[in-house]
Image 1 (cartoon, rainbow, N blue to C red):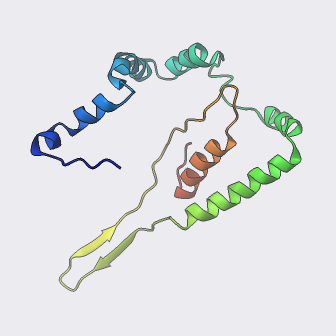
Image 2: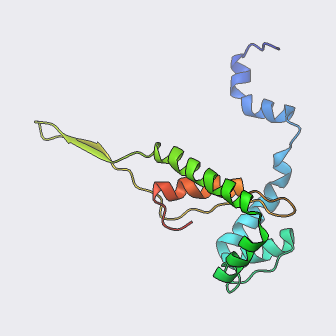
Length: 156
């Protein structure tokens, strides 16, 4: 283990010093990231469809983005029943775990008329990134979607 004494000068430049040591130089990607973010802000879903085709090689449209019931039923016929059982068990475990983390709103009033409290409100909408490509990550879907559902998010 290496012990480093942090001087006042190093404290002021800690992020800069850490990035110098990092093998990743994130700054070189900033322009590309900014371009993507701006395109999504301006063109919204159309930009997402373009980037999906560019990066993933998949062409989607507003008409094809939603998975149909028929596609879901077809997928069930192509997946081993044991895997489906494992995924369902994981779903229950994840939901149970995150249900215990839920916080409730509470309010308390004092004789002086002061009201104290906390209002807990779920976000209205969240986006979930699910890695695609050659690998399949159902755990990413479960670990992102289920906590949002437990929290009461309406649009995922």
